Image (cartoon, rainbow, N blue to C red; front, top):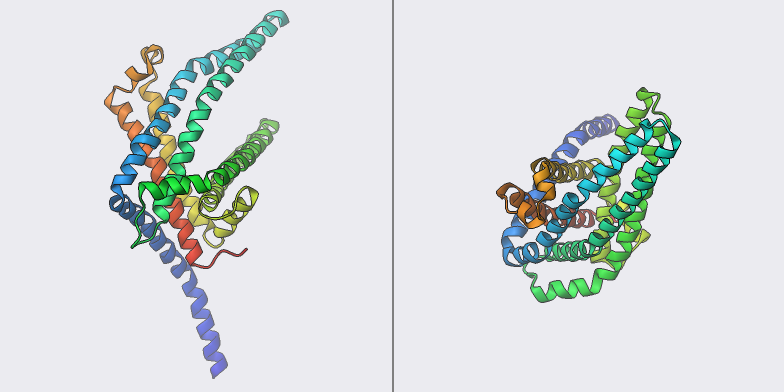
Length: 312
């Protein structure tokens, strides 16, 4: 009789696992966003300062790069398209040479923006992570935030370089496979879809790895490995949250391109473009999104630590 009751109990537990898992994921989802809102309101003064002095300059630099590089990208695309259609090899080589020169100019422009953007991104990330990691009754301050930046910026820089290298190497693989099988659309399309899904997963792992390097004495590949371990049991859930953040960021970028599509915007000064209320709103929205995504990632990191999923 006891064996039968044990079997029935085990069967009921197995049936209840999906429900518990789904309800648990939903409760975590609510806690992530309710917790991020609570952190915003509890630390509105310091977060507003981070937004004004760090996140908004970062948004302005990224949007300015998008606007400034657009004519070069269009010109490069036009030159390469004409070079493929030209009838003489001499003209084709001339056009491709001009395209390479324009590509070098585009690379120099990106490098010009990359250094200040990287600094503002680093400071924004560490500051937001520090604010989100401080538990009540303690409250973050400007001094504690500055101290957190001084203690962790080297670890975050090393982890960022490793993350960037891994990400660049990975995104080449699906594109290479799709290009190789471009004559077989039934195969190349699934490769691109699966590759995009895995790319979002990798972004989630790398984001957690950066939080690990900001809050622990870990950096580089070790921090990324710990970030992957932290996701154990919640990979699909964190993939969904990362998809949402990437989707909102992509919508902002696409909306900005549509608003500044005309030639009058491309030829205008950058400050003139951002005088419009819609572009200015997107600028602010992106700055808030940068801070919010860092806070959400930190909350998820704290949840995984409390759940004891730190299997190192």
